[in-house]
Length: 479
Image 1 (cartoon, rainbow, N blue to C red):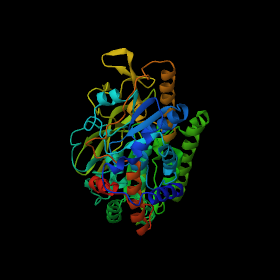
Image 2: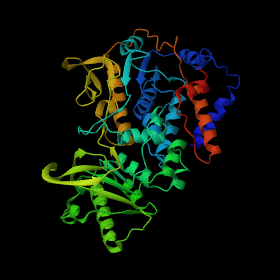
Image 3: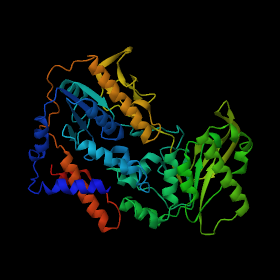
Image 4: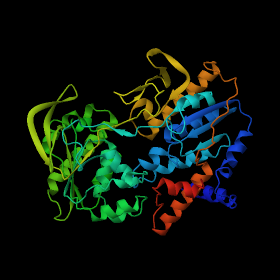
């Protein structure tokens, strides 16, 4: 983050005479328009997919201007609001995004919501090409009775709560009980388990929001169950996340030996990443059987395999015992109940349809497309010229940031190829985004917000204290 802070202060020093006026905030917008550029491309969404696509386009197309339109006043999407606070090294990618944003041919328009402040039709009229990358903001559900109860919440909302997504501060999860049951075994589920079980002093050094730190300090949670439908060989978490869990101080990991019946015999046939993960689980299981002890005041991490959610009640959750048949989990008649003062659902995200003009598949929760080219509504064989999708909005929630980078680069290359092939018009003049009558946060506005957060964090001995109130952000940004 050193690069980002130095860049921030150098830019702010040149803007001391800044006036809190939306016309003044357009200084950079006007200067960018002086750059000779024939092609205008709009990216909707300032998360990893949007920034990586912008990086590629700016490098490959010397005669283009790229505008990024973002719903929130602040950029970086999942890197800011999804990456665990105790993983600051993952957030270093913000340095790369900042460098891209400083390109004179890129403009950032924060606090602009697609479908509300601007329509897709308007964007398509004002740009040669539009790339949708606004991510996945909804949850897949268990489809069980009582799922709407207060003690059942999504892991996505819990992550947003401790990461400071505006509005998430209202969640107020009840951490007064001993047992938390997390349904799902991906990295997000493990992140949540680690946040619940980590020593509070360790979390105080991160950018975890202050209200979340206060709640976690009062937490009475002692046991976290991490439950999956399938077996150890299908666990979705990665070795890095598991290692972190196994190293947590004053936390004992307890596996069920029965879940690993026959697993050791299959290790040699596994591909290297899966083999290493499985060997670590078996090693941990072996060490557990030797020590056999848990400190009286210690906490427990309890991974449980071959269980499918069946029913929810006030203080427990019922699971069907499953068996693997051709790698699929099939429920048996046997059941098991686990204590659950709080239930966190972590079975995946899905996107929402931000604008009625988007060809959206509500069943799969993503935009219909072919290799990033958005398909025409009602016609699966042809594409909408100049309209594209990347990131989780196109693929569903899958992979890590590196996966998103590769996907965004691929779609950006497709845009470049289509321009070279004259697949859509780039000869006509396009005006770009209309800032009139809108409370726009420019990149300079974001730098002011960033500075305030870093200053507030420094006073508390942490990297930053995120601002969660949108109106406060807008005031700091000067709009």
